[in-house]
Image (cartoon, rainbow, N blue to C red; front, side, top):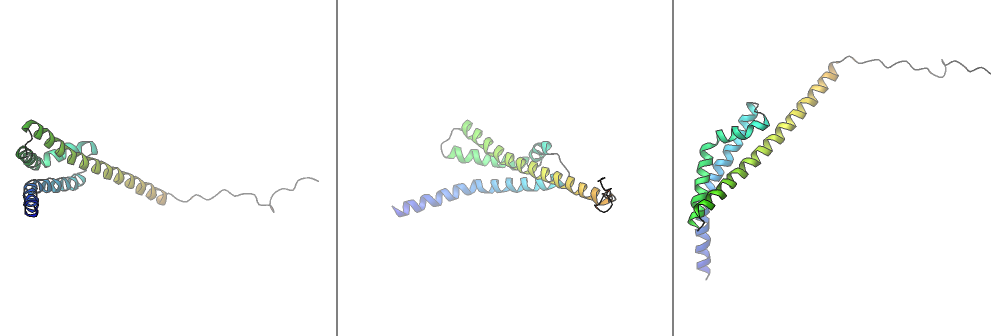
Length: 141
């Protein structure tokens, strides 16, 4: 019984390794695309197309590996293709959300820095002189 469980575990680990390499390649590509998009100052709304273009080969590789894995495990090819597309889109959506968030934070930080520089560059204004009790007129008695 124990050898059967051990053999099953080794088989599953080996079969999942066929999906792990393309998954890691796709994740790394998305990280690199995000870094490059930030340098290229790509707008948040344009990032998804940018990432799809930059990671096209990795998307195809992961999709093919996922379809092959699921078909090998008894899933119909059409269903496996749909699942693979969803998985690829989930990774991309996560990257897009992260990029948009970071782009928003960067924009807010840049605005705050610009406001701080503007305040520092503006000459200080002297406060208006206020009447003190000694200089205030005395009410008549």
